[in-house]
Image (cartoon, rainbow, N blue to C red; front, side, top):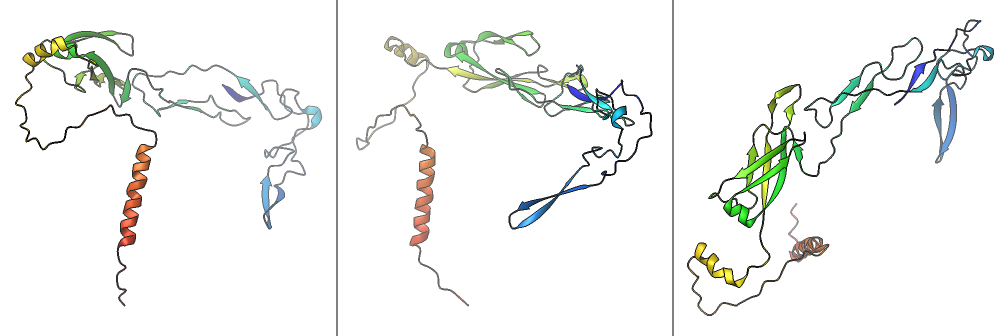
Length: 262
């Protein structure tokens, strides 16, 4: 980072510093519309410091400003459990000026999104895709944590996982800041992937395993329809919303105006 530091090569001038004759508030006027705007600027001679060093006494490095720009590398410790927006203060690492205490550098953490996990407080959330067979017959999967450990996630046979079922692994979330013994949970939402088609040879076996249930009785007056895959067109919702508001406006316009009462 770049900061202003006190010039170590600066030497006091041979003559006492004096206040420049022009060290007053500088006024400029700028036309804005039909009128004039008064603008205030600092004294160009002393840069609003109230001090002026004679030209012969000025250092070539700082030109009499007493500070020079310096670049340095400062280590920043990010502790476990810090969250988005946490402020880290580096005391005395900011700009310096002669005769004044150095300023601080304030670092504000900004969390980056992760491809696998999403953080909410101390808890972590992730999705896991499993096949229909795994949802019905159990599975064993591995999951790599943020700190590089490998967890073995298992689900026993005989217990079915429904689509969007959510399970939690306790104490595998984020640690509490400055209290690592308190940790959140790791929540896993299961996305069951169904096959696109089923071979006709297996339909009878599926029906034997999963009975359809009683069929609905039809009277013969029903209308048979065919379903097609739904693809949402771009802007379709906006058009439907506009049509709804248009119908609402027309209904309002059709209503007779009420009698005005005094």
